[in-house]
Length: 488
Image (cartoon, rainbow, N blue to C red):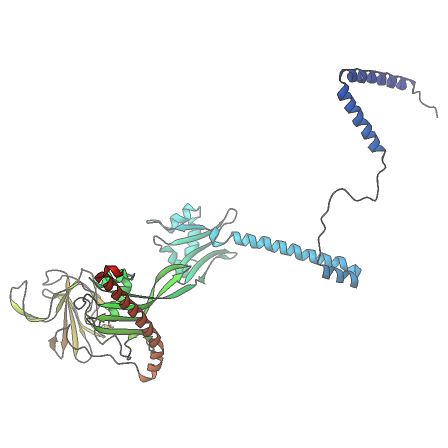
């Protein structure tokens, strides 16, 4: 084979090299420092290229190995080297599963109630408006409200109600939480087969609270100073309402003490619970009551087992004042004649509930020009009670009523000069003064329940002694301060 003629190529290479060398020499003369540095770098590069590479050397990149538990890895290698990789793989799988689980937990935490969209109902706002503002359809609202009997209450919302929505950018509506009642949440959730509903219990906390007060001007003022709600004050008065006339018999210096429950939920005060025990000192006479369930529901009993609830209420309503007492020779303000006033007139705002003073049957429920709207009730032991000048009547002839049941409302119908209740009490057909007549006592606790009642009541009465005694000591100290300011 004929060798190619390389003479032209060599000549061109020599010419190019000569030109390059000439240019480099000219540049070196013009910039000696830069040229020297460049020449030195070229020489270093040539020297490094001449060093042979090490085939068995470690790679320059760092790799972090998975550290296995020493005991498990060692046992696997010693028992069967072939299974070592399988055991290592199983441990790696566990680590991966752990990482996935942690990721799932983090995702679940992100959908906790605290991350849901919270909505508080404003006055005039409807659930339809809330759904529309959240971009949810009217069809979804229909499905939610009709998902179960429990969800039907969602159609009746009030200002202040709170709803929590779990919404997803891709899935949309996932669930809704609302308050079902004091003890339960209502959850409405989207499932594969549609919208479902369930209730979930809420934890309630019951705290026992004790307080006391001394009356200087009125019971309500003293109760407010003792941080009692109006509702709790009324319940306190109702306990002793058969023995004390709170409209006419309260005096400055009277005092009370009570132990009651408070209901808390999620660390916040919710409402007052029942009164467990109470004491009221009225004009030097002490009355005590303990809450106890004798089998017919909780009620209040005196320390000797006598029910505080007597057969009849002393007054069948919460009144503001007595406008006219029982008087056989009263001058009538409308007829201008002296005529017997066979009952007691209790002044109260129109619409105030009127209660049945005892268990019985309605014998009259009608209207006439003199009595206005009126109701007569027949009780046992030939006792009858009458209620006149009502604005409304809630019972009809023949109805059975229980003591304390609302039978009508205070009004000014018939011959009346203002809103009040005219109340009459008849025994064997003769009128008696409702405020002074001896009311039939209720049956005391049976002997077989007295031991259980004492076990319930004695610790509570002992605590009332402590509360009452501390109040007396405080009052005595304040009196000492008022008499001698130097000691204070």
